[in-house]
Length: 127
Image (cartoon, rainbow, N blue to C red; front, top):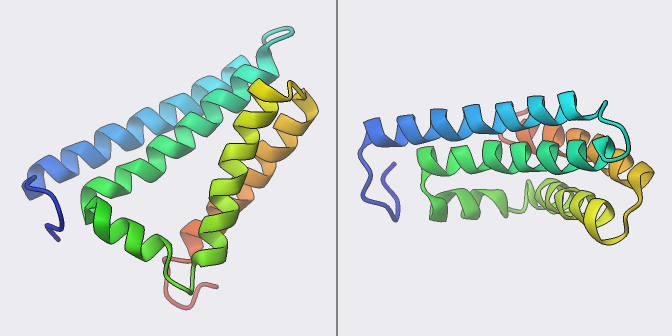
C-alpha cells in the first residue's frame, strides 16, 4: 500500500476523503453555475472538470502516485485512460481557448461517460 510516499494509512484516508469531497463540491458548484447568464456554461465546464480531476486525484492517496499511474496505463485500461484524459483536456480547451460553449458541453457529457468507463475498468469482469 505504501508505494513512493511516507504517509500513514490514516493520513491517506483523510487525504482521499478531502480530495473526493472537494471534487464533488466542485462538480456540484459547476452544475449550479450552469444557469448563470453568458458565462454559465464555461464555468460549468471548468468546475465540472476540476471536480473530476480532484476525484481522480483522491485515489492517489490510497494507492500512491506511482502505483496509480502504473495501473492507469495497464494494457487493459489504456484506452479508457486515454479517452478520459483527452476529454478532460478538450473540455478545458473548448471553454478557454476555442470559446465554444456547445463544444464544452459536449465534452462534459463525453467526459462523464469516459470517467464512468475508466472507473468500470477497475472492477474485475465489469467491462
